[in-house]
Each structure stands twice: as structure tokens, then as C-alpha cells.
Image 1 (cartoon, rainbow, N blue to C red):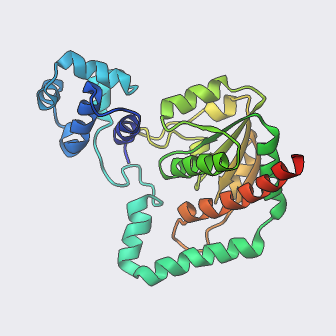
Image 2 (image 1 turned 120 degrees about the vertical axis):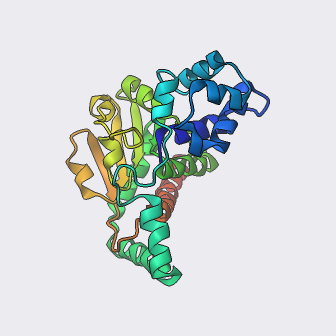
Image 3 (image 1 turned 180 degrees about the vertical axis):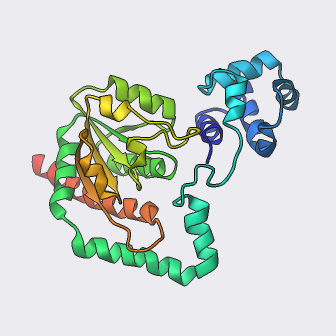
Length: 268
């Protein structure tokens, strides 16, 4: 999934429908397959606005100009040769192997985690959340969905944390975060910690290595524990080719919140 489509979706989710920018974003998404071939004038005509308005909108999304936006518009599945992408890893395998194999793979990962779970890591995560006033949950694309879900689950239990869907807002926060901040990262592969996953060429990411905040991670990749800026991690190794992290994140966060609830009740 490309950078432009993600920024457009995130932008739309935070806008009311009567604005000009909402109209531009919706028009671009409705005509997304053609954007990478259209000039700024053609897009302006499509949106029924001026070229200067399109240029301003591109900067609003965090691009240098319309050409930068256009460069990030081409949607090619697995354009970065990532075998773990959603279509190749989940949908294509489901089509090839059938639904039963998909269900069996999920159950296999759940059972493995159940049998090998280190409850002390769950306890440490809950205590870290309980002990920090400022807590932020971060991830990219589907992992960001887990961060949003975690935010709502904790709110139900009286703990209010922050998350950012916008990738630029995430980087800006990491730069300014202090030692008093706890950052919980959701990343199946671990690449989110070191790479700009949704940017062309997946350039190196330095924001985590430079942040002052405490960083703890939920990941299927045990190598995240070797990163010097990672303080702790809950690891859930996959037992099949399916990347079941969307399901595993839900289970693990439920366990963390159950323990947090216990700690919070004990302080009352």
C-alpha cells in the first residue's frame, strides 16, 4: 500500500464532509488508479478547483508539491517486494489453500502462544502502562489499527493514551518525546522500527533510535529485542506462513489490559 493512499484515508477520517479538502481527497480516492498519470491541471479539473488549491492540498498532506504527491500515487501490490503484504500473504494463500487452512493457521498460532506465553512479559507491559502518565501506541497500516483498538480498550478501563495515524505526526512525536513517555509499538515484522515502510524505497528510519522515550514492542520477530532502543518486547512467533498478527494483537492486548485492570483495582 502506497504512501498517498494511506495519507488520503487518514486525512478523510479526520475531516467533515463539507470542506474543499474533503472533496479533493474523496475525488482522488475515487479516481486513484489514474492519479499517477494525471498532471496537476487534470487533477484540478477533475476536482473542480484551481491548480494552486491542488498544490496547497499536496502540502497539507505532507508532500513537497504535487509532483511529490504524484510520485507516491502509483498503487502496485507488493511494490516493495514484501512477501508478507496483505494480498500475497492472506488473500492469495486463502484462495490457494482454502478457508480451512486459514482457520487452522490462526488456531495454531493462538495455541502456540497459549502454551508458550511468558506471563511475566504481560505483567511488565501492564506495569509500564500503569506507571507512565504519558503512553503512546504506534504502528503502520494494519498494525496501526491494533494501536487504535488498544487505545479504546484502555479508555474503557480509565487509562487514556494517545496514538497518531499520520506518519509525519508519528515521526514528529518521536523526535520530541521525553524520558517520561512510554511508547508501545505494534509491528509484526519489526521493520516499522527501522524502515519507512510506506515510503518509496523503504528508506532507513532514525526516529526510534533518536527518541528519548521508553520503547516496548509487540512483534512476531524476536530480533527486535536486539535493537538498543527497545526496552522490552512480547514475541509471538508465527507457526505457519500466514501472518496472523491482526488476530494475535487483539489477544495479547486483552491479556495486558486484564493485568492492568488488576493493578489499577489494587491501587483503589
